[in-house]
Amino acid sequence: MSGEDIEVDSTVFPLRSKKRKSHRRMKNVAKLLKLRSHETGPSCNCTRFKCFENVTERERLQIIKQFNEHDEQNLYLTGLISHAPIKRHRSRKNNDEDFEYHSYSYTYKIRVQRDNTAIEVPICYKAMLSMHEISANRQQNIQQHLTTFGH
Ligand SMILES: [Zn+2]
Image (cartoon, rainbow, N blue to C red; front, side):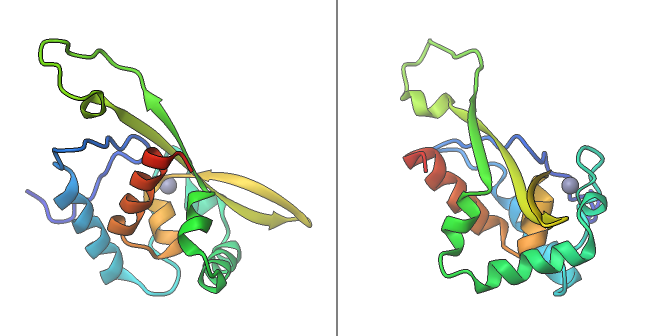
Protein backbone atom coordinates (compact mmCIF):
# COMPACT_ATOMS: atom_id res chain seq x y z
CA MET A 1 0.00 0.00 0.00
CA SER A 2 1.30 3.36 -0.99
CA GLY A 3 0.42 6.39 1.05
CA GLU A 4 0.78 8.58 -1.97
CA ASP A 5 -1.92 6.81 -3.88
CA ILE A 6 -4.80 9.22 -3.90
CA GLU A 7 -6.32 8.17 -7.16
CA VAL A 8 -10.07 8.63 -6.92
CA ASP A 9 -12.46 8.11 -9.75
CA SER A 10 -13.08 11.72 -10.50
CA THR A 11 -16.42 11.70 -12.21
CA VAL A 12 -18.25 8.64 -11.05
CA PHE A 13 -18.95 8.74 -7.41
CA PRO A 14 -21.52 6.17 -6.41
CA LEU A 15 -23.83 7.04 -3.59
CA ARG A 16 -25.28 4.23 -1.60
CA SER A 17 -27.59 4.74 1.27
CA LYS A 18 -26.06 2.08 3.43
CA LYS A 19 -22.61 1.15 2.32
CA ARG A 20 -20.00 3.81 2.53
CA LYS A 21 -16.96 2.05 1.30
CA SER A 22 -15.28 5.04 -0.24
CA HIS A 23 -15.70 7.19 2.82
CA ARG A 24 -12.30 6.57 4.31
CA ARG A 25 -10.56 7.02 1.04
CA MET A 26 -12.20 10.35 0.44
CA LYS A 27 -11.13 11.50 3.86
CA ASN A 28 -7.55 10.67 3.03
CA VAL A 29 -7.75 12.78 -0.07
CA ALA A 30 -9.02 15.72 1.91
CA LYS A 31 -6.24 15.27 4.41
CA LEU A 32 -3.61 15.17 1.72
CA LEU A 33 -5.04 18.22 0.04
CA LYS A 34 -4.95 20.08 3.30
CA LEU A 35 -1.38 19.14 4.04
CA ARG A 36 -0.04 20.41 0.79
CA SER A 37 -1.00 23.99 0.33
CA HIS A 38 -3.21 26.75 1.54
CA GLU A 39 -2.75 29.03 -1.42
CA THR A 40 -4.47 27.70 -4.45
CA GLY A 41 -4.95 24.00 -4.00
CA PRO A 42 -2.66 21.37 -5.49
CA SER A 43 -3.06 20.25 -9.07
CA CYS A 44 -5.32 17.32 -9.74
CA ASN A 45 -2.88 16.05 -12.35
CA CYS A 46 -5.71 14.53 -14.29
CA THR A 47 -5.34 13.82 -17.96
CA ARG A 48 -9.02 13.97 -18.77
CA PHE A 49 -9.61 17.68 -18.34
CA LYS A 50 -6.11 18.91 -17.51
CA CYS A 51 -7.87 21.25 -15.13
CA PHE A 52 -4.82 23.05 -13.85
CA GLU A 53 -3.56 23.65 -17.37
CA ASN A 54 -6.89 24.84 -18.69
CA VAL A 55 -7.44 27.22 -15.81
CA THR A 56 -4.72 29.76 -15.23
CA GLU A 57 -3.38 30.57 -11.79
CA ARG A 58 -4.95 34.00 -12.00
CA GLU A 59 -8.30 32.49 -12.75
CA ARG A 60 -7.91 30.10 -9.86
CA LEU A 61 -7.21 32.98 -7.51
CA GLN A 62 -10.29 34.66 -8.84
CA ILE A 63 -12.32 31.54 -8.19
CA ILE A 64 -11.23 31.10 -4.60
CA LYS A 65 -11.73 34.79 -3.91
CA GLN A 66 -15.20 34.73 -5.39
CA PHE A 67 -16.04 31.62 -3.44
CA ASN A 68 -14.78 32.95 -0.12
CA GLU A 69 -16.78 36.12 -0.52
CA HIS A 70 -19.92 34.22 -1.29
CA ASP A 71 -22.51 34.07 1.49
CA GLU A 72 -24.27 30.95 0.32
CA GLN A 73 -21.27 28.78 -0.39
CA ASN A 74 -23.09 25.49 -0.60
CA LEU A 75 -25.61 26.97 -2.98
CA TYR A 76 -22.78 28.35 -5.04
CA LEU A 77 -21.15 24.93 -5.25
CA THR A 78 -24.42 23.22 -6.05
CA GLY A 79 -24.67 25.43 -9.11
CA LEU A 80 -21.38 24.03 -10.36
CA ILE A 81 -22.33 20.38 -10.04
CA SER A 82 -24.50 18.41 -12.42
CA HIS A 83 -25.68 14.93 -11.69
CA ALA A 84 -27.23 12.17 -13.72
CA PRO A 85 -28.30 8.70 -12.68
CA ILE A 86 -26.18 5.89 -14.01
CA LYS A 87 -28.21 3.18 -15.65
CA ARG A 88 -27.17 -0.24 -14.58
CA HIS A 89 -28.49 -3.74 -14.20
CA ARG A 90 -30.52 -4.03 -11.13
CA SER A 91 -30.63 -7.19 -9.15
CA ARG A 92 -34.21 -8.18 -8.59
CA LYS A 93 -33.62 -11.04 -6.21
CA ASN A 94 -33.86 -9.01 -3.05
CA ASN A 95 -36.42 -6.31 -3.23
CA ASP A 96 -34.61 -3.70 -1.24
CA GLU A 97 -35.38 -0.09 -1.76
CA ASP A 98 -34.57 1.13 -5.22
CA PHE A 99 -32.33 3.74 -3.79
CA GLU A 100 -29.84 1.09 -2.80
CA TYR A 101 -28.99 0.53 -6.41
CA HIS A 102 -28.92 4.07 -7.57
CA SER A 103 -25.67 5.62 -8.48
CA TYR A 104 -25.06 9.00 -9.91
CA SER A 105 -22.37 10.40 -12.04
CA TYR A 106 -21.36 13.94 -11.29
CA THR A 107 -19.82 16.53 -13.49
CA TYR A 108 -18.17 19.68 -12.29
CA LYS A 109 -17.44 23.00 -13.81
CA ILE A 110 -16.20 26.44 -12.92
CA ARG A 111 -17.03 29.81 -14.36
CA VAL A 112 -14.23 32.12 -15.33
CA GLN A 113 -13.96 35.43 -17.13
CA ARG A 114 -12.04 35.29 -20.36
CA ASP A 115 -11.98 38.22 -22.75
CA ASN A 116 -14.84 39.79 -20.82
CA THR A 117 -16.97 36.73 -21.34
CA ALA A 118 -18.00 34.33 -18.65
CA ILE A 119 -17.24 30.83 -19.78
CA GLU A 120 -17.72 27.47 -18.14
CA VAL A 121 -14.82 25.10 -17.89
CA PRO A 122 -15.37 21.44 -17.02
CA ILE A 123 -13.15 20.20 -14.24
CA CYS A 124 -12.69 16.97 -12.34
CA TYR A 125 -13.70 16.11 -8.80
CA LYS A 126 -10.24 16.62 -7.38
CA ALA A 127 -9.92 20.01 -8.99
CA MET A 128 -13.34 20.93 -7.67
CA LEU A 129 -12.14 20.29 -4.12
CA SER A 130 -8.77 21.83 -4.67
CA MET A 131 -9.85 25.01 -6.38
CA HIS A 132 -12.41 25.81 -3.72
CA GLU A 133 -10.36 24.41 -0.86
CA ILE A 134 -13.25 22.38 0.42
CA SER A 135 -13.18 19.01 2.12
CA ALA A 136 -14.37 15.84 0.47
CA ASN A 137 -16.85 15.54 3.30
CA ARG A 138 -18.45 18.83 2.51
CA GLN A 139 -18.55 18.04 -1.15
CA GLN A 140 -20.19 14.73 -0.37
CA ASN A 141 -22.88 16.41 1.70
CA ILE A 142 -23.65 18.78 -1.11
CA GLN A 143 -23.89 15.94 -3.60
CA GLN A 144 -26.11 13.98 -1.30
CA HIS A 145 -28.39 16.96 -0.98
CA LEU A 146 -28.38 17.36 -4.72
CA THR A 147 -29.47 13.80 -5.42
CA THR A 148 -32.02 13.78 -2.62
CA PHE A 149 -33.71 17.07 -3.41
CA GLY A 150 -32.67 17.57 -7.02
CA HIS A 151 -31.37 21.09 -6.49
ZN1 LIG B 1 -8.52 17.54 -13.07
